[in-house]
Length: 302
Image (tube, rainbow, N blue to C red; front, top):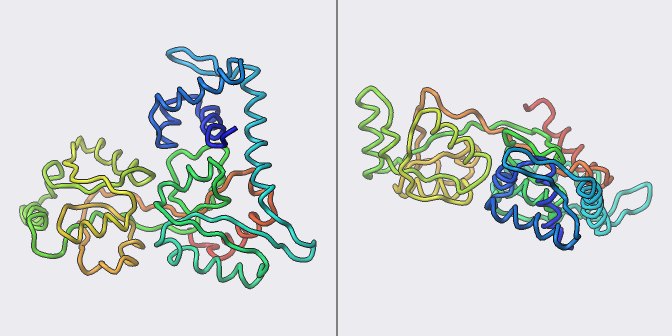
């Protein structure tokens, strides 16, 4: 059985809400619903009792939930090799953005290599917004991610550091810069409804920005939805719009001198960046050892 299907089902059992699961896994509500329906058809049992308002697990659903949890955990443990009692050996799978590789993980991996030289790190890179999804689907042991407003119950989060989230505009002469400057010179703020926005395609910062728009009653003019903060900074530097990005991404991008921060009275809260992993996966000595080294490396940072 496809572990992705199991991961969708487990997320539904956590939220008991198709819409919430669709948000967490970045799927359509209909895709989530179809996944559960096909599972029920395959098993020949109703797993969830649902009506227009509520949802709850059936007895068969509760039993299958345990099967799904154990299956995902056991499949991952089979991929791991443990050495002798004296020294851990094997492989730990990590997922993070390219920026996080050197901005967040570098000191952790340096310390880990000294104490666990026989453990191999298998690194996957991509949009940090995919981190928690990859963890839920069992694709990686540990991922670097921003902390969401609501964390899935099966996921453990280790905060490492905070990075301010900045609204940024092009630093070079262009129409977008003139629009931003006009609002600032008028003694007010940017006309958020008219200036083109480059926004995150998905993930924690998208949720934060959407909430900020709703609070202000702003209907943004979206120029582009982009995967990854690095791409947002690049597009802003080209004068295509304004965007948001963590300070550490702006500094690491090599384009810090081509964008400038927009001062916003009621801006976004800082982004808490950390590690996430399935709670069951932390039972592996390999995974737990890297987790503990990370905690010691950033001890007192948050």
